[in-house]
Image (tube, rainbow, N blue to C red; front, top):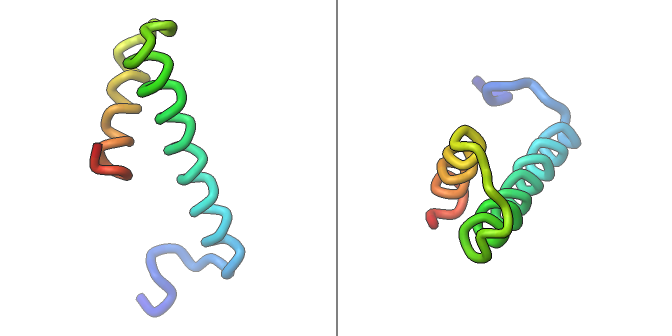
Length: 61
């Protein structure tokens, strides 16, 4: 357990952090801004629940 759950090089952790940050930014833009605020986008319940869970998990909103 010295190297964590995944034995990644230092740049692997940077890539993972950037990907997770990108998913969070996309969730805020697509779900909160376009779907919830303006109702300009009609999402299927599956991505809607994913975005809601992801934002709850990562931002506490």
